[in-house]
Image (cartoon, rainbow, N blue to C red):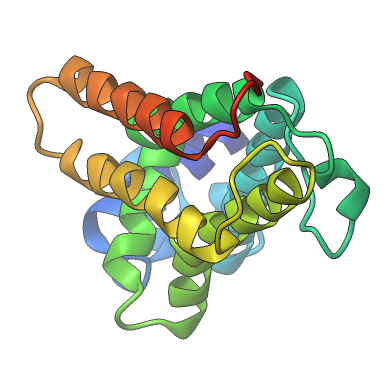
Length: 208
């Protein structure tokens, strides 16, 4: 991606996160960058094209993180085999990485704020918010936990309930991070939660 195209994408995302997607026009984006609409149209067809590029970037970053931390990239229905041997260490490391990504990464935090603003007035944004930040992560962890229970790594339990118990504190901490002055304390709370969750649910003698 060219530097100009990248600047347009990031400036648009910042504006979407601040003012909401619907409130921002191509003219607003171009004006923020000190360029004409004609110059912007050389890189993107319209505002929707910018938005689609933002969403595509998010999914690419998500896939890269999944590969890095050795957790499944696709939904269970697509690659069920990838869910069979996920280690607890991978889950722990991935969860911490996800928290850092959503709270500290400029792209991700603004993407989250954009969806938070727009979810109440745009059904597409509401679906994205659910898939990326609420029910999507819960369903993902449910599939992982179900396989871990079948493998005898976790105690027998309802995997959906476990997924909610695991993810809810992280979701709360992500939202609290926007106004917190002590991000390190939030990370400490998250790590303590992860340790306690696995301590309470791991089968005896299984460490990973």
